[in-house]
Length: 353
Image (cartoon, rainbow, N blue to C red; front, top):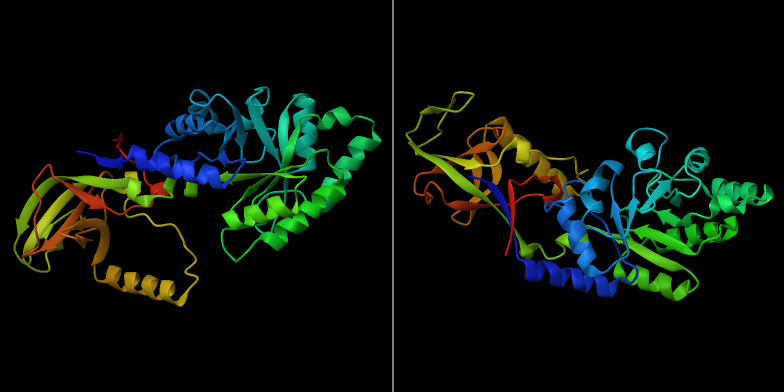
């Protein structure tokens, strides 16, 4: 009766080992819905890998990770002087991300022994200090004779874009900024670099420790290790013109209405903006819009080796599909494949085998 994620444990872990071997200093990332598997499960997997730091997305995700992972916990969302961030300041296992000079002063006033990384702004323009701010911060601490205020500094963080070609030139510029600032660290946490880019940085900057933060490649790098399946809940043969569903639609031709598990509460049928950066992507978006206008929307469910159409928009916990006459009809209780975005899907059950 569930939307279930089946995980091949051997393949899942074999991919983790491959990524770990290619990326020295790896910092696994377990955030959001835990890439479909759960933050707590990924924290346990990270512990089994033997890494010393695990990154989570927000302070609210710390409780799910801290019981399963014994090492340090790096919070990627920058510290702010309110809410869950403020409550976690005194935990010695937590490494805060600080993206504003004023926040660093507030954090250290609240908890002088806090551990933290300083985020340097990148071309992402999401969070981070400028090169000038990093330099002024280091100069102010040195000029005051209070170098102990940077005692908890664990490194500098760069959050890079996911696309746009190689980021090596940008990272080299950012590393030069770190050197010029005179900060007492040679550790850098980076995201979204390829294995070749990481190897080039390790070769060209041997006095720096490069620590790649990795989530998608680590947990979802072998997509064949994960399989989403939905349960068939009901089967209704219909003639052409038969009325069905919340909205009283009419069957376009004879066939079968299939009710399956999985709806908007799971993330089924919801779509995040993609930017449609290519001509092909834009054409696909237009085609989907045209189908939607006539009530024919392709679903992520596959039956008989073919993606099937939604009979109407997904319900909260179930979806209705239309199978044309002649298509194979599964039995109630059977499972069918579902193509999902793991980072945006909430499963009723995760089963390892």
